[in-house]
Amino acid sequence: MENNTSKTVVAAVTADPVFFDVTRKKMIIMNLSTYGIYYLYWVYKNWVVIKESEKIDIVPFWRAFFSIFYINSLYNRIYKAAVARGFRTLATSNLALIYIVGTIVGNISARLDNQFGAFLWFAGLMIFYPILKMQEVVEHNNHEINPAFTPKAAYSLFEKCIVAIGIPLNFLGAIVIFAQLIGVAI
Image (cartoon, rainbow, N blue to C red; front, side):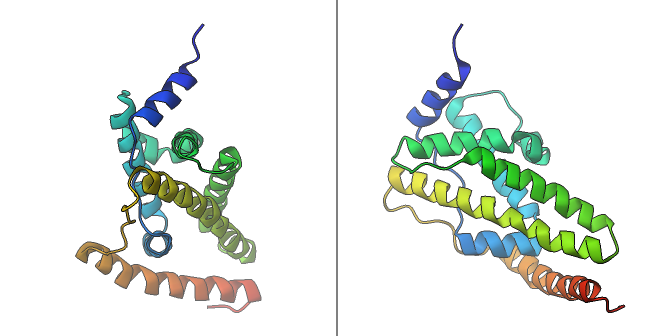
C-alpha cells in the first residue's frame, strides 16, 4: 500500500510553490481591519497555490470557508515545502490547534454580551500566533526559491479603504469590550 502523503510532499517540493506572502505587519493590520476575513483570503490563496503546484482536485474556496477542518493540512503542506528548503523544526499541529481553538473562542465571544464574552474576545486574539508563525514559514520558503522575493507590503486602494473603516471600528469595539471587562455599562 502506497503512502499518498509522501507523494503529496514530493509534489509540493518539486513544484517549487511560491505561497501567498504578505508582510507580517500587513497581515495583522488587514486581519484586524476585516475581523479575520483577510486570513481566510490568505488561506484561500495558499490553497490555490497548492492546487496548481500539486495538481490536485480541490476547491480552494471551500477549504478556506471551512478552514478549521483543513488548516492542519494546509500548515503541513506549507511547512514541508519550507523544510525541504532548510526551515527549522516547527510543530504545525500545535499551530493548527491554536488556530482552531482561537477561532472557536472568538466566535463564542461574539455571542456573549457579558464580561466572560469580553474576556473570551481577548483570549481569541491568540489566533495571531499561528498566523504569524506560518507567515514566517511562507517567507522562508519563498525567499529560498527566489532570494530577491519580497512580501507584499503595499496596500491597494480597496485595502486602504478597508483599513480606514475597519481599524476605527475595531478600536471602538475594543473600548466597549474593555468597558465590559471592568464592569462599566455602555
